[in-house]
Image (tube, rainbow, N blue to C red; front, side, top):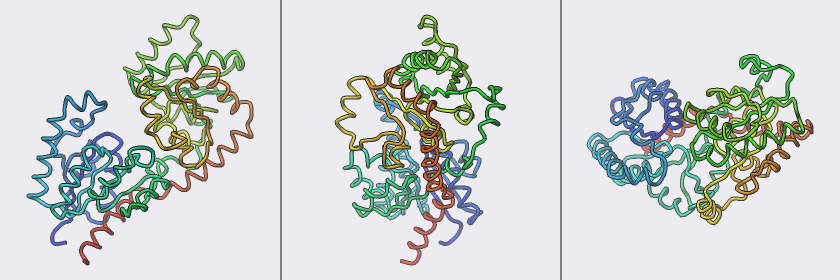
Length: 385
């Protein structure tokens, strides 16, 4: 490589921004003069990336919203392709956002630019045919979880498991009493963390059920303290509206943000399936995972998904380690009984704790450094060919 190392990079949302910042920092420790540009969020910009477009233009959720912005997104991608063709980087890295980044990677790879994709799409669960598109688009796939590698190896796509940054940032042992003190929660109480989701639709389908589950539990555990961390003001307003609709609603403590701290303080967690389940696992807290969708969406997903478990703790364990209750099974009685099992049987909670600790250690690899190693090894290989 003549001159400073040049890297093209695109992240599409906050989680990718954090991954990108960790990767940039790890690369810059070895190549302090590296020039990094593309689409970056505030964390990546603080790490030294130059953003050619605002990242929030890519952060689009939902089919209708994507269709409404389709021409704009295509225009951004076309301008990025032209920019990187005119100023070829030594490597291009697409972080997550596969619907946007894989097409970009394909066009850049076709003109001889090495490409890396960081965070596997869920090809192991559904739409497995996408692996062929990925194989044409990327020279290297970086995965966060070990079970994701098999499908790429079967299709001869170069792949490397790098671990998960959350496993690096969350300590192996988390102090429950300190977390309670920080939140002004009673040191000796039995505490349930209730996480109904961070998206409007998740609360729409789960808030009432979770509140009824608390009522069911309180009949059996009158002293149970229930703490509900809410992702933002809109979710808090939505949850408070659900409480107001219910006669004699149970007493709950609502908290703005701080979901990790609330889970750390808890004896058990009831949550909507998602990244929170990974955090609860890394915090070693026994959990019950619930999910509900619109009836049509559930019917479609049920026919497309190829895995028997859908929550990350169970996928990582390779077995049903924590209860997953989906759609009609996510009833107050079933959810409450599953939570009660952990509260009444400390030995069951301890077995789950031990398995969570094993998985945490498997994921705790120094993900950003591993990802930087893999990217730089790809460049070295390219230099010697």
